[in-house]
Image 1 (spheres, one colour):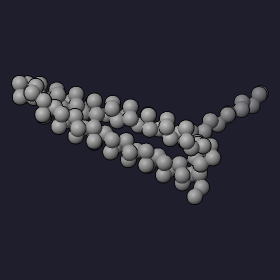
Image 2 (tube, rainbow, N blue to C red; image 1 turned 90 degrees about the vertical axis):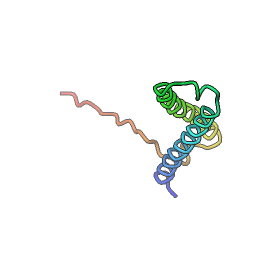
Image 3 (cartoon, helix red, strand yellow; image 1 turned 90 degrees about the horizontal axis):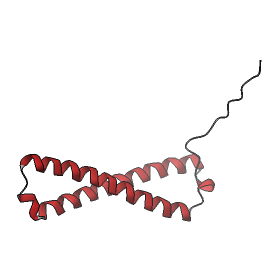
Image 4 (cartoon, rainbow, N blue to C red; image 1 turned 30 degrees about the horizontal axis):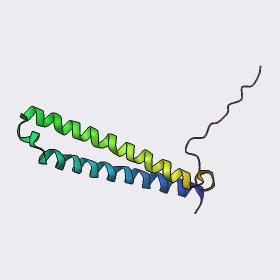
Length: 97
């Protein structure tokens, strides 16, 4: 496989990993909230806000886990050897006139 295919597969795999971690965090936080004694004492609007907070928290936790896993992976893998850069700077030379 060449570098471009490796890069595309890595981005797809990393995205899938991040989505799976976010879903696991979402389910875990929902279960923890449902089992907590506070869930029965909160009004309906409070339940809505709790759902929003759980959703945002699961995204934040998944991003944190993703960064940790990515740093560990980048320490083990030589990025320049296996992957193409995603963003390439093109130096535009101005022509003097």
